[in-house]
Length: 469
Image (tube, rainbow, N blue to C red):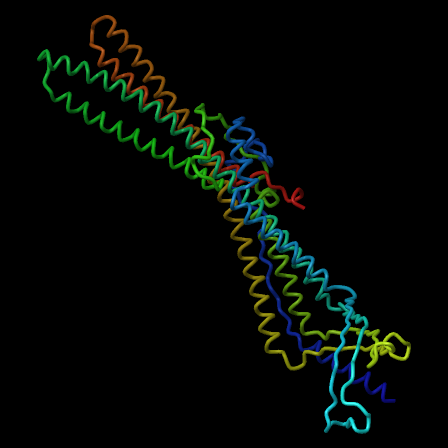
């Protein structure tokens, strides 16, 4: 009869504990598609995992491969991945039956004023030796352990995704800086050509001034132009040097350790983006995937917080030996087996548990807000980079007309100079203008290449959700 009373009281306590857990409702206002402007859709291809190889530049391949293998930012991200894997092992190790062995030996003295006075036992000092195995098993009825492991797995996937994000940002930063260095070399070439034409004009002007054929005012104007070109060349040289410094810092080395770069033409790139970007972008951006995994982890953590209101029930077993004499420790009479059922009821801890539940609910709401913001920003990045590439391509096409006209003026000026109609300065002026127009056209090309790298990053840099798992 006593057993029935104990069982009834236990059931009542369990029901009371279950009823104390408050209900929380968190709205999942996730965006299911990225709103990318339809005007920028095209028939381009998604970037692959090694997208930089499409530019067919061995030096760029070498720099990015080195950065991914040994770059400091990627190395830091990899430590987070390793830490996350250890956390998974730690959480998984807490599930199932927990078995631990124990053994201890001590020498103790009985108190003269204790329950068993030594004068009756005939000794003051005695040895105490214990050995055995403890085992316990907790019933995961409320899925607390399962949700904890699931949250830890999600967080480990976030760390892995962030490592891929770090590699992507590193590769796009290096590509942008490297192509910027190449663009600087082209601009430096045109600036040098302009300076050469200016110096020749100055020589002719000085000769005519020496022959008193014209005043000195024209010489002063040429000196100003030469000073401006020299300042431009200095700025370009500094820009190129800073780009090498940036690349070296991204690789975690000094500029002296960088290989020598070879100047060549910038690659020709397409201005189209893939179709169905608004749908496929969800699986192509590592930051979107990381945000989604954070939501999953936060949901599992919230479930764990809810489960904290429920009773924990575990079985504990002990197979031990205890003796005051070593010779008798492993005899059958020294056995001290035990089996017990433990129930933990959070009856008077509702304030702490409610606060903990509120924190987890807020974390889930924050994760959803971050996800929505990340998705909107990703769509904006794609639209911005695609429209920028289109606008730059149109500007480049329009500027080709100015280059063609400048070339025509050079031809006319050269013919007039050959016929003696004008001196060489008109031809040199037309040639200088052609260099300026070519430099502007090259600058537009460099901006298109940089926008192409930016669009590759906006499209996910070759990341795919399926490939990451």
